[in-house]
Length: 363
Image 1 (cartoon, rainbow, N blue to C red):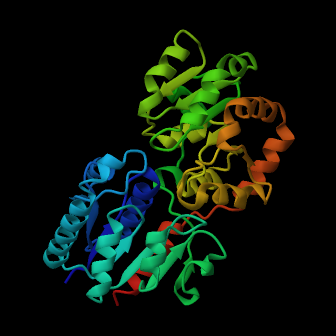
Image 2: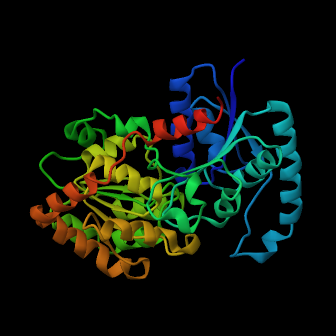
């Protein structure tokens, strides 16, 4: 009889893409495995997971809205309803294991699985574990992590250092620099800066590029600018009529962007970091300061301390990001140093390692 696995979580690309990479690795190891994703309704996993060829069920779950307290009125009802939905999924699908990748939907699914003695695996992407994962980690069977010194969050005997999964389209890419530049209609022979603020965009990074766009272009640089939806219209207006800029809210072919890029400006989400290590890109990180426990700064500093990346605070981004990028673009020695050091932190087969840990619980 084929084994059944639930992969629960989502919310951002940082949770969804590793989840899909794990699912693909499981399928590669055993075609007969049945995989069901469980996400949160109205979040991007409901679109991205079916695009990857997997079935997903959405729970009526949401997080606490800090910016608008009135929006939290229905929250207790949503949480209760999501538990009933999770129980129904557990009873009907009867999983042999449940994997949590972070995000709202992972909590009810993993908690129920643990109550029913179904093996659970947590994939903690960050260097600072989230509260949900810390609670669930006490009863999880395995905890797959990307950073060292995670014993302060989880029981030591359950931790396995696997690295973070990187999409095969990126880790196994064969796209050349020329093909990447052609895809974005940019010129050969010019340094290309790739600006990426995560799947939802990054206000501080967008404003920094917007404020200093002419300086960037006058320095002979060209730009791939992924803005996220909220900033797209403003960025398009700003870039109108200027050569050497490609602007859009989302990039579906990240492998082309990495191939074209000489230098990257990025948030410091764990998956972005994993991709940048694999692709060996000199990077300036602008960590999102409101991430739980400021984990993006902790993530970025783990590279900065190894001289494998540069960092600018979100609050100082507007003034500092572009001058630092122009300076880095002129300094080939620094670029090569960053490239060499970041490449040594790459873990290319994390998805397979995690799949092996999951399958070891099914024997």
